[in-house]
Length: 442
Image (cartoon, rainbow, N blue to C red):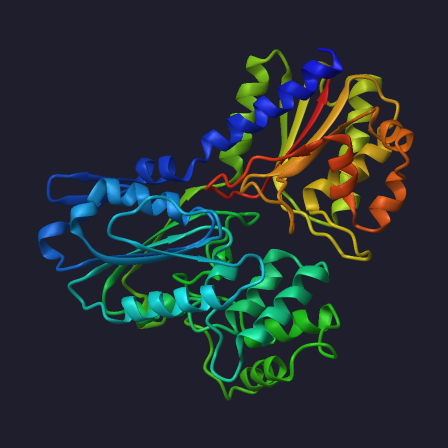
């Protein structure tokens, strides 16, 4: 394969991975109706014993998920509310859709969270609540504890996203500042039965971390939240209301999040319906069909984006030089979610920064392509899902007056790849299972 063919193959492989984690298809794989029975992975919910079904949800994929659920039991849904990101609306009949801000929560998200909490709180022991949760749900369900306003929540979100904390760490703090996250939504729905369908965007698929676990009993504590604050030296800059609440929780003056033994979460079933590994396996299948030898490295890659990029670039050089860990034509595949510590004032996201950092390491290599994109179609505060580069990227950038090293230092990968026409732009994909990274060696 020459360079042009490799770049085209990368796009095809990524599209195949997206198709495999389509949110509506995921719902239909796990939820079905047979007569007067609703079946969720083999467990039956007799519809004649249910008075009302409420459908709620939040996340980038929740619109597509809600549309699929309506296609299965639309006639039985009494009411519903979901919150999605701006531009991610899918057609629904019985479910009200609230568009809201992501990754920084806004007033629209606050209204959506209030409506969702109000609806589930009205459920009785003869009702069924179906909750649809996917990545982005943390920002799209911003209902702070009393005494903490939205502005304080927005500020802590910005600081957590910029300091290099992992999504699991960020969500521990979010859960202890929320009236819906960390199992609180499930507790509010009690005594109704609750069935949650969850699409994972967190490494390792820990259910309590996805969308900050609104329907999942929480194993973390205020002590964990305060330890994370200390780890990233956030205390001097956090809003006083945030600090007061977390310290009060640490002293035992504020109730903890619902734990597994809490009777209010006893009638909850949480069902994982899609994850990053499924996307990577589909990518490997498509790569093989295109004549490449695929190898899935891991679906659990975390760490600072630039460091992860250097490791991937080293693998590209090794394949080219020695044929290890597999001979060309090869496609190395990885997933997960890296982090970026912001140092500059540029524009970009973790996938674009990964590709730029890797491009600096593979300059001059023949027929090597680096590709990375978010399955949700967005990468940081940009309209791109990611970017693609090859051994000519650095020289092409310098030929038009750009300095890739400076762009990396300024966290300004977006403008460099925009000038090179190497951004990956998909628009909203209505799914979200973290990132797909590809190394193609012809």
